[in-house]
Length: 252
Image (cartoon, rainbow, N blue to C red; front, side, top):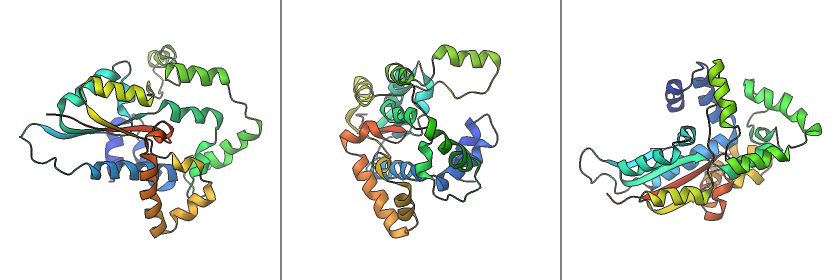
């Protein structure tokens, strides 16, 4: 069982989601890039975190944006993560600026399909259905501005109705702005906050080029290393593919 399968099996209320999440790591190029960024971020911050007392967390890690699902308690959650960290904290949250382009492109995932012949249901839906929507698609600018303003795809009242009716829905998801996340971390005592936007570079690269890179093992690793460098630049933080990543120091 892969790490992704094991984790998602505990948190998704749909049994098939565990295997689907694991498959995504080898099916969609943006997931590969974002996973590589998080892994490198963690590995680059492991040095010097083992020389502390027992019953303290040398480094606290929260990735794949679970903090964004804790709205309206997201700030308190971040504060508690900083509180239990003794050396460093690395968190990944949903990015408000990163989300906005989705509202202009219903087939945004098509750019990242690694194997166009894949029988994966999500790949097939993306290529056979979503792409067909582009010719007649017109963005809803009112919705775009609303998402930008409230930092959520859906109103909290609309999501609550799903709960009351017992329907399965995506959880309440709060998307952060870069300066907002920095301010919250610093308010709770985190220092030297470094922000990054995994997937920022890949957004500008055509699918054919991305596939060529991924099919060359040597070039793939060089590309992922450069993506990490590029996506870690401060001005790229808000334009990550999905998430905004923050790494900070904490004085124990």
